[in-house]
Length: 100
Image (cartoon, rainbow, N blue to C red; front, side, top):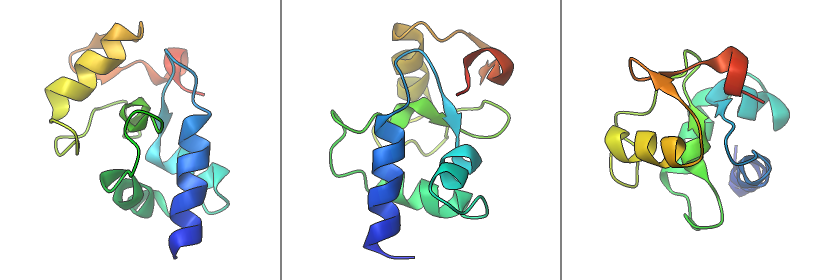
């Protein structure tokens, strides 16, 4: 894992449409290794371009937002998703409805 993997993560996350989400595992799979979900989280934690890389659209496999969301906490991530039309129920996104 190196800078190349992080760059791949950023490119995949840029492709998640507004109003949709992807799990860390799905992003890892689209980057070529579905077993690197934790590394996706590391990459997003050091997101070099918050306005251009919509890391708020990445949630856990159950549709939950990240407690340690790097740019303000879970509440900020939830608010950003809601602003894009993603409905959360009990703090979770319906992955069947909103995931890519």
